[in-house]
Structure formats: C-alpha cells, structure tokens
Image 1: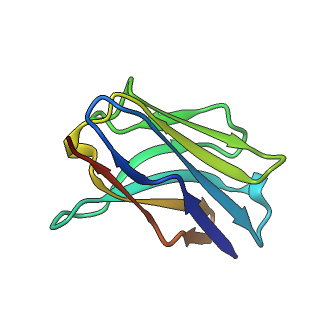
Image 2: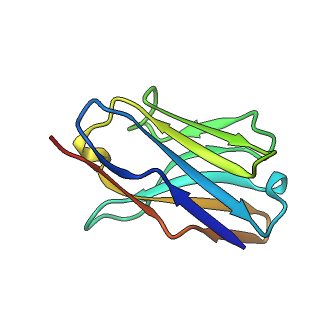
Length: 115
C-alpha cells in the first residue's frame, strides 16, 4: 500500500495550495480518506475527512470555509484545496486512509505559509 502526497510548498498569507494524495495497493472506494497535519511541537490533528462514497465531508473548525477535500475514485486520489492560507496553517500535511480494521499513512508534505 502506498499513499504519496504532493503539492506542498511555500506560499504567502492569503494564498492557495492544492495538495494531492495518490493511493495504490488497496481498494480505494472502501476507504474513508482524511488529511491530517502536524505543526512543530504540536500533536497531529485531523484537518478534513471525506467518506467512502464522497457524499459527506467534515472539517476542523480552524479550516472550515477555507479548505475543501475531494476524491477522484477513478484516479484513486484525494485532494485538499487550501485557500486563504494563514501562517498558522504551516505544518506537515499527511494523507490517511481508514476502514474497519485497517489504516494507512502517507509520508507527509510540508506546507509553509510565510510572507
């Protein structure tokens, strides 16, 4: 199983980034997909989740209205569109796949929001 994130980088406050996670080695449509993040010195936190059908999404309060999670079942990818970025969004962002009895993590991609 592989989860490979891409799209991180350096962006100015107010800017946008789009993260992608390419998934292989599992039946993608069986899994809830999430993005987590971990800032230096802080615990890893859940940012956004999309269910296995792509019908329901949930967001951390800190990103509601700014971030959008989506999935492409044909390409086995999950995306995170991040708009109106703030310095406090700086973190390593991780892709996560979960179903009953199994979960997998990507290696993470760095997002830095700075002038």
